[in-house]
Length: 78
Length: 366
Image (tube, rainbow over all chains, first blue to last red; front, side, top):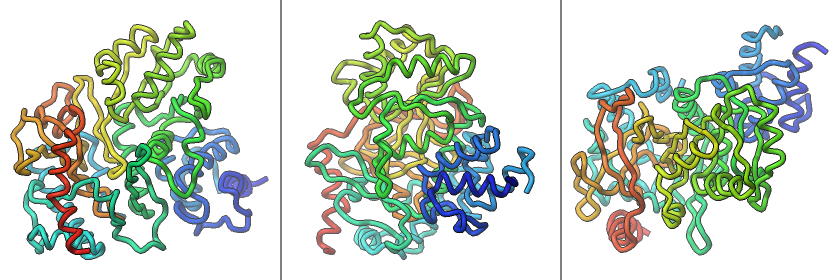
C-alpha cells in the first residue's frame, strides 16, 4: 500500500467515509469530521504510520491536504 | 488567515500593558460591529443601550456587554442555521434552561487554537498519555455537545491513548486504571476532569479502595467550579493537598471558563492566581451600578474574548464573583490580568443583574 493509500484508509476508518469521498477538498467541519472524529483520526493516522504527532500538528491538521503536508515532517512522503 | 490568528503568533502570556489594550480594543470593536450587523437580537440590545454605533472603542472598558444568561432564553447567533457546525449546550440541572451556543467552522478552529496556545504553554507540545476522569458516554452525542463534553474533547487534543477512567455510572474503573498506570509508568501523564468529579469519583474512590498510586509524574488540569466542593468544605488548598499527600501529584492547575466562551480559559498559575491569556481580558463590575471596580474589590466578572465569531459572546457579564489581584506583574512571570474567583453572584442580586439590564430590553423589542 502506498502512503497515500494508507492515509486514505486512516481517514476512511476514522471518519467512517467511503475512500472515494476522501480528497484534497475534505476539510475539518465537513462531512463527519468534527472535534470528536478528529481525535479518532489522529489515533488512526498515528497507528497507520507508526508516528506520534505533536499537539501543534494535531491542531493544524484541518484538511486532508494539510495532513499530507504535516506528515512529510515525519518523513512520510507522498 | 483569520485576523484573530495573529494573537497566536505572540508567545502566550507575553502581551501586556497598552499594546494588549490597543490590540484587544480594536479587535473587540470590530467584533461588536460584526455581531451588530449580523444578529438582530444583539442589534436591538445595543440600540437600547444607546451604544456608540461607530464602534470605534478605544478601550476594552467601553466594549458593550450582555448578560451570559441571554443565551439561555434567546436564540442568539450571527450566522445562518446552515453554517452551524455544532451547538454547545450548558450542563444545566433539571428545570434550568440550557444555553445553546452556535459554532461555525471558524469559531471552532479558533477555539481549538486558542486552547492549544494556553495548554501547551503549561505542558509542552508533546502529547501525553491521558487519563480522563469521566465516562466516554459524555462525548457520544454528536449533534450537540454538552459543556462537559466540549471540555473533554478540547483537552483531549493534548493527550494520546486516552483512557476514560469512569464507567457510565460514574464508577472508577480501578483495575483498568492501575493497568494504564503500569503501561505508561515511565511517562509524564496528563489527567483531566471536572473538579467535583476528580474529587468525588477519583480521589475519594481511590482512598476507599486503599489505593495509593504514585502519580508524581502527572499533570492534573481541572475545571468546573467549586460549588459542590464548598458544600463538603473542600477548598482549592485542601484539594491540592489531598492530591499531593495521597498520590504525590505536584502539578495541579484549575481553570475558569464557560461554555459561552470555549477556548478562552483562565488558567491558574503556580502562585494560585487565574490568568487572562493574550486574547482575553476581564473586568470586575459592581452588581448594582455596573461601574468598573478597582483592583482588589470584589464584583461581577465580565469576560472579553476575541474568539466568538458565530455568536455575540465576545463580551459577557457572567454570574460569577471575582477580584482582580494585579496586572502584568504576577510572581509566576506571566503577563496579563490575574485574579481570583469567589463563587456565584447571590440569587437576589442576580435577578437585578440581568433582568434590569438587557433581558427586559429585549422583551420590549419582542
